[in-house]
Length: 282
Image (tube, rainbow, N blue to C red; front, side, top):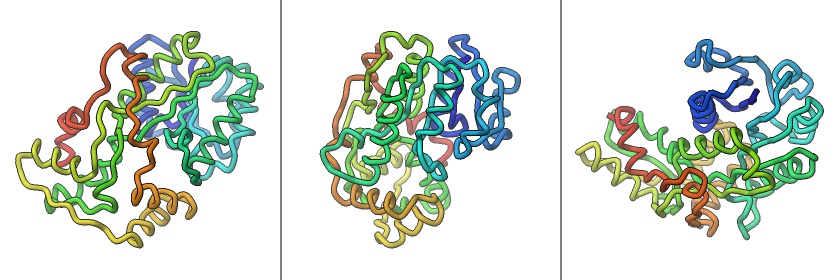
């Protein structure tokens, strides 16, 4: 049995889908069981909260592998969660971390992800760390203003990254969990195959829509307020995000070969991601 946390998110849902395709038995831990209804009877859904490690007993019963997200709002520390996972008899953990954990530049984002990695790596469990790059799906929040006004309002139009499709991250995670041995004690950095700016992403969107889409730079204070108030980022993390958007971290423009190594094909491009999600923007 494989436990998937964060299954209602962009990556976790892909992990579940790919595992089911491989015939694996999957259990989902979620605070929102309604969000898991799309899998009907195909998965075992357990209501629970990573913020309360003492409540994880039912979710971990009979589980031997787990996909963990430990850097989320409301989760104060990874240690008790990983201890509960280990004590329940789980053998292998795939941890979703951030590409910024490998950055030479210090930040709150780097520190929280490194801390989670250290807990897993020192737990006695078999482990694989998946350092995800900037997700292409981070541009989905543009959809309402694109649909209504054909405009994208964001901070950091010149921000560059080797953005990765969450579907590729989820597929890599599923491969790791289905056959952990080749990935034991490895750190996979998961990126797309190209470096692209926010403004270039807007241009791709406009081309595939067949209509002009304007870009308007948001003031930094407005962007920070949205991160803290709407996205519930801790202030230190919001500040780290804004610093990243002002000055691209060298880790974010790294193009890594791990996706191709694990999947045997090139990573999807941003153009492919938009083509597959274009109706959200029409």
